[in-house]
Amino acid sequence: MAAKHTKPNFSQSQALDMVKRLFGLTASEVRSLPSYDDQNFYVVEIEGGEYVLKITNSEDSKKPNMIEVQTYAMSFLNQNGLRAQAALPTTTGQLMSLEEMDCGYGSQKYMVRLLTYLPGTTISKAPLTPQLMYDAGKMAARMDTILQKMQHPHLSMLRRDNFLWSLSNVPMMESYLYVLEGNPIQEVVKSVIHQFKTSVIPKLSGFRTCINHGDLNDHNVLVQCDESDGFRVSAILDFGDMNCGCYIYELAILTVYMMIENPKPIEAGGAVLAGWESVLPLNEAERDCLYVLVLSRFCQSVVLAHHFVTLHPENTDNLLISSRKGIPILHQLWELGKERVETLWFSSAAQLSDKK
Image (tube, rainbow, N blue to C red; front, side, top):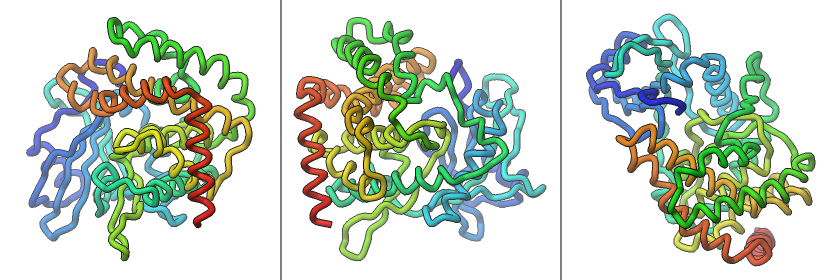
């Protein structure tokens, strides 16, 4: 979200028209879904099929090759046993269509896709038991190991060197610290950036690289009830933040979002870690940096959310959801310190693993 008015703002009638014109489907119901910087509509086709009409923001729509890779990644995961949405072809057989339209900000180009609607509820609405967080950690590690095998002619598009949400780019936050002026959290953020520079950057060469989903937040992980009346992770949504990163980044990001929705946030890290390590045990450098990387992602969430509010004040509530919940947890993590948090995470992860 680099500039004002990049987020699409189409009406339901415009969405209905796109579904009919591009995909040849007649919708009996269309309603808006919450979104960060794209626009999503839930669509029920007249014969009962359920879909999501995804209209990409005008900035990202300038990178069709990137969107092509993201769409292919979903298909690749489906082929390898992890559920993700699938794109439906247009009437001309394309998986996406670049549309030049006016949704209130003058004529701009938007990439439009129709994706399958997956049943289930977001993990944000499920009781976050240790088993479910273990399941989420396991799913994330499986996903990254599958994505690492993916081949595509435009894979190089995922080398997003200046991508603000990449955990490699934590020092870039310094340019945006002014948005927290007067907020006590600013000092914590400054300290975390310093910790990143002194304790993470020297160990970067020890991290194993991979392709990251990059945004495993609590609204992008779907769950369904299982036989024992518990919940199981059933699917992954929204690949718009995919980038070349490191395995440990994915774990840190997922840990942050599992903590945000958790009644016992600090303890959540152990269950996610145990699930992750059941697939992909951490090496020494990764273990040593997990705490600072989790803090760093909390800081990114806070700083960038406040930055985007200055660009999109009309979307303030949606932009600050995670940030508002995250600030008290960030304070708590920082005050507890690396040693105490790591002891808690690694010992509870070991106990959970012993029970498996």
